[in-house]
Length: 312
Image 1 (cartoon, rainbow, N blue to C red):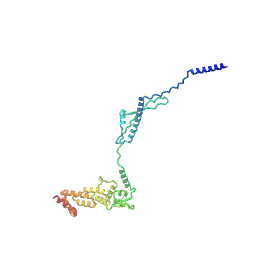
Image 2: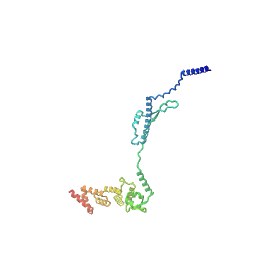
Image 3: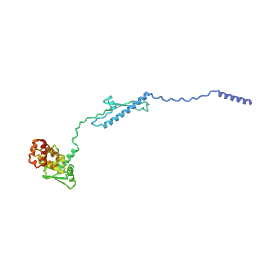
Image 4: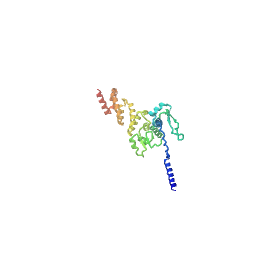
């Protein structure tokens, strides 16, 4: 039994020795995959350049739209320098290349597509210039209302009868008339003993129907009545029209009478012009100095004598 035990122990030791001497199995780790190679610098630069060109083209289109929206018909359309360059490249149209995004299914970028943008041209539309303005329409409207007797709130009395008018129109020309029409109960304006022609000229002048071109009193007496109404109701612009017509009719026979009218109606400029014209003409000076009417006007006589003394 002892020998069997020793033999078993020896066999166990022998087996253990063999196991220790057997080579060990080495398990190697799986090699790591290398990252995909970075895109070539040239391809990346081309891609960035295409994206920048697309962005630049979009910005140019926005600037062109804004310049066309804000440009006036007189100044024309404003074109930026970049747009001029593009128009030089293609007079009719210009193309914008837009590179599509890479396709997920195919894994390859989609082909480039070209968008053709047509050039916008401003049309030269022939149109006549508008005639008149708001003031012209206002004058025409007021004249029509007066002639039709609509909305009239005052009557102007002449030696012939009554003429309807609008107090607002009359008051707009004169502070005196505005003060008189301040009372709404005032519905009449008496211009007697002026003739109907003189009153009609005054009323039509306030409505813009009478001007220097068509102010033509039929007689000097009518013009004198217009001057009297202008002085009484504070219408200095109408008085200038009457003064111009009075100046056209002055001669050596009525020079003194014309000077008196100027003094009566406050036409100082016309009076000075009449006296100056007498003094500068020796024959006229002699005739007016000998006129009996001059003797009844001491101030004018003194002026004429002083002029004669200076000339001598």
